[in-house]
Length: 271
Image (cartoon, rainbow, N blue to C red; front, side, top):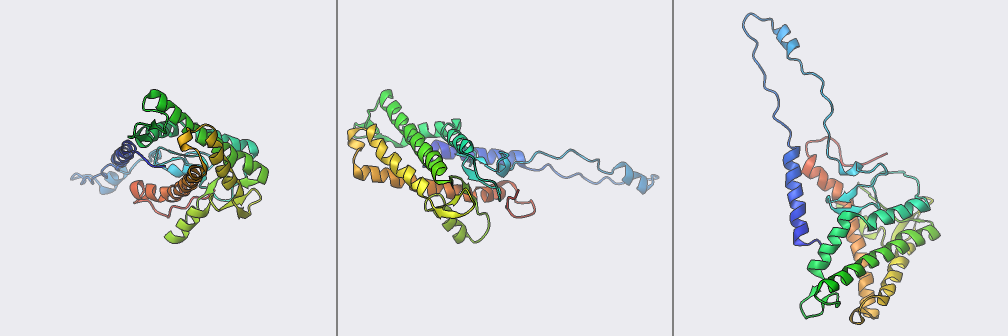
């Protein structure tokens, strides 16, 4: 997914605001004991009192199931799993993730902004060749949502249930930049985790993406139909999945750098 200028400004604004709010207060200053007062008494009187633990910002523990919910604060990531050794999803849980991912309010708003700023053609055909008026925008936006619905239902629910594959992205979290990047670019695109914990070719994701690409010819304008444009939509979907995996893989590291640079320990999430 490409972020619009508005989305980029929003992320930067949220980042700087959160950094400012998360800045720790100045430490306590020492007070010299007054003449004639025993220093042990002063020390006892000035001993710090136990305080309630402060709320901390930790994107890796937003949801109890190990999903961050959103990455970069705005991008839906309910299919991302940060915990290790988790049980496989039931068919109902796979369906719930599709619904959460597809109908997330922030995700719907970003999709509308993307259509508004990236899908309008200046050659007079307007939004996705539907026209330049509000009707054209609505049809183009509806087509984008239908793409997401069909791809999600097929590639993240129906085929994973039938083939017993797990549609989630499991963050690696350790190793070199090359190994983590290679892992992110292949998981959910070429290989995936089976429900029994093994690894296999991600036939469910690929089948869902290809099927959704050809089904889109039923509702896209004539100018956007055909084999070459269908293949292009399939490629864009797979590339978007790979980019989303990269964002999910490195988001805890980015969050750690921005908000927890003085914390101890690496960014490794366990049960």
